[in-house]
Image (tube, rainbow over all chains, first blue to last red; front, top):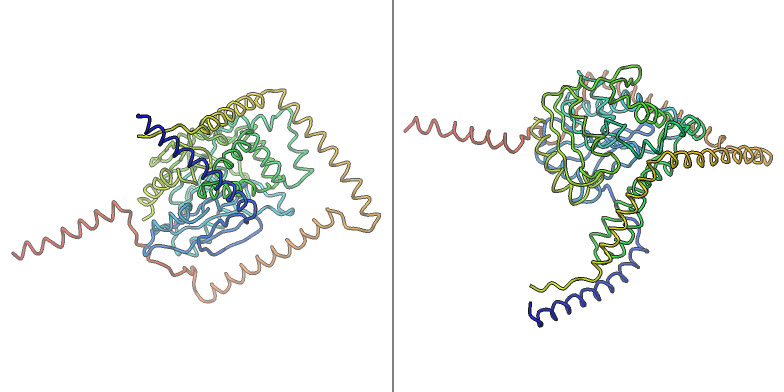
Length: 358
Length: 140
């Protein structure tokens, strides 16, 4: 590199730095004064609402659609709009444009009279109710399910307990099966010290703050570092928009029904019953080997919420012949939303599910 | 090619290094028995305080003839119960209406459910093309 080129390079760098500093100041003011970003804009209808359960049907965006409709099941701790953050950053929109008939099972914060909701209510009532409504609405007697995180666990339990049901295909996204590998959650809910009964009996509904604190504690430096990154990238509209959407989603973590929290803590975290094949839901024994339908499991390589080893055994536990496991780069959320998901997970879902939705 | 180093890159890499180090350090700490014992003891104290304060404030509200949190929650529960019954009635009425009109399933109209995955669609198109070509060959 010649001296003249070096000078040019340094000059360009200084110009860029000055420009970005000005932009940071202007956009910093905009950031503080503007309202939160709009999310979940893809047109839809609420076709069922019952307590904490809400079922959306999205308007098809393709001239012809696959025969089998698909239901996306969200984790009970979070809002389902992470599937539909913004145009061109929306899994829902992507699926619609690729010819799927999309339904989403979302959760509202459980009301105080729903404190007694347990796993059986989600697995034997809410999901079957949604599936039944979808079959009635579409006139098709089969449905595929895509379940994310705890939504994946619920979908898996549903599939195991409705082996002869209308489920055609199942996609689990970063779904924990071996809960003994959830080491930090194990520590937060240490059997020797954590009095889950006292907590649940005293609060009824486990507050969203408690859930959010647990998530934040998994990576305590994450939030401050993200704020520093935001300051650095305030000049970049795309970065700021993405930051605000994800922060909004994280801040809207949902409270949990007490009984459900108790069961999750005792049966899954403490006794690892799903992995040990000793789990019962509503008096019915859950046997994952009874699942014979086509199944795909997507695992995130750097998932700090559901560690790789916690979700890895899923595929070996199910009895399906047509089973696929994919391990993708990324974390728990970047697996399903954001620029990486657009390139990695979404096309994989489209290809796998499309072939099995006719 | 001109590639001057951005001095802020040093700062950025320091931030991400610190983030990783703090996370890994605190994760190690959180996995210890002492951490679990301390946090749960603190939680127990917090809950005891909460219960004690809750009891006192309920008594004070009662003194001033004001509804407590439990009263308001109870009202909410009753409203929710009414809502639930209404939903049940609505569902029953829909089912009855469907039975009366003789329709078991009322499928929503929409695009045809004929879409094929790209590979199958391509195969189908190729097959169609080959069957179309055959009669032409026979004719010649």
